[in-house]
Length: 173
Image (cartoon, rainbow, N blue to C red; front, side, top):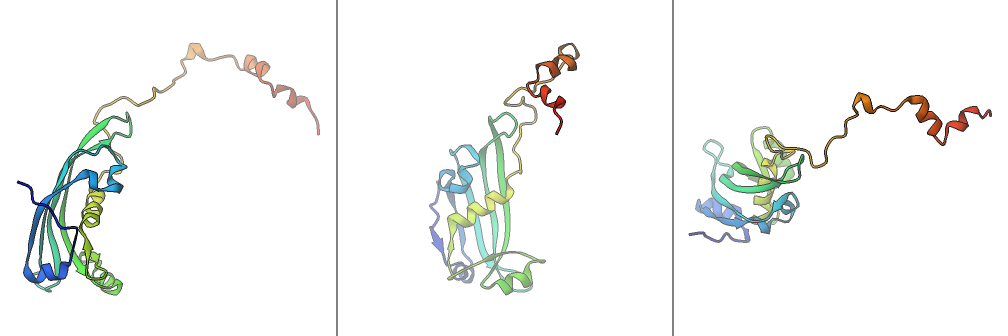
């Protein structure tokens, strides 16, 4: 049974309560992701734990976002299945200075106005795990490659005579 996820959240309040959010989000709800898919059918399974880091007690979101996507193969333009899985370990920050201070140790998420629009957060994480170019292991290109065979090569002199610009070589300036 799927649980519906909230639209926006106060992540710092959820961290204090140590909340676990679990649910599904349809792929068709992600506008930026839809542009990369051959079909927008399917759901992403989301498990988010709002807690604090062990040593430094920083507010952190851990968990996973996973689901099957149908991407467009960049070679043959057919659908190619891709299992998207993102393991989250993201520290929540309120300022750019705080994010810059933590950037080498943690992945950070800047929380403005103490709210996170959950759909954007999940979509960003999915986009980060997508391959640069989705390809089948073996497939033919959408348009066949044109290769010249030695017996089909036309004599260069004949090409020159048929060239409408050949007369220009005799002109002097």
